[in-house]
Length: 142
Image (cartoon, rainbow, N blue to C red; front, top):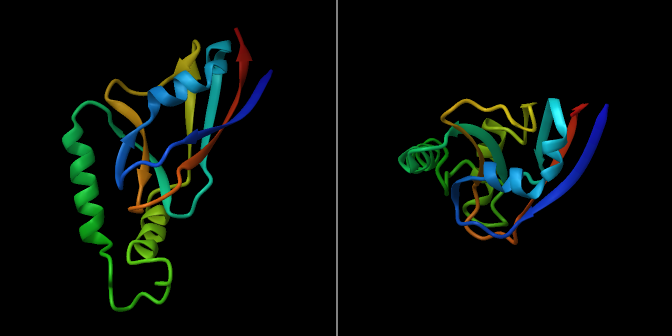
């Protein structure tokens, strides 16, 4: 069995939903060594998240951002955690609604996603220093 773990650092991204599937494939080439297995992808932050969704039409990412901003607004009068800015508590809520980790099958050296699926880094804050994702691979070597 093959195990590999690495941290992938992403530079700051603007608030929104960003496709990172190819970043992971390019920056974790060890995926190519696995014939069958999985990748566990974990974001080390409480105000950003991960999800899988549409990888072709960028309107999906725009609509997701609009929906989440409507569903979880900034400056709600009931927020107590406000010291870090108006977008901080909503970011924590959005991160809890989505997820901090994903598990994706690996087949024949690549992520076994559906035709229209991509991995998103969901940035819920306006200003950040960047994000770190831990990718853990496990599987049968080719």
